Image (cartoon, rainbow, N blue to C red; front, side, top):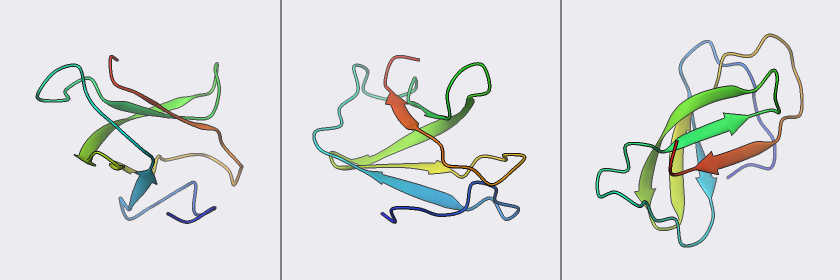
Length: 76
């Protein structure tokens, strides 16, 4: 995973979030979301659990270059 990258992606690019022990409370992991930025301007995108150490999601459409906090939630 890069330490930085595009915040706005015109080509629906994906980003991988690397961590440890990602597990979902439900077998389908249907409530996995990734939040970019903080409220009230946060952008939520649907995430996909690739394996126990990796989550993949689309780079969000954001209006300006910025450094954003990234958070993952497994329960919506």
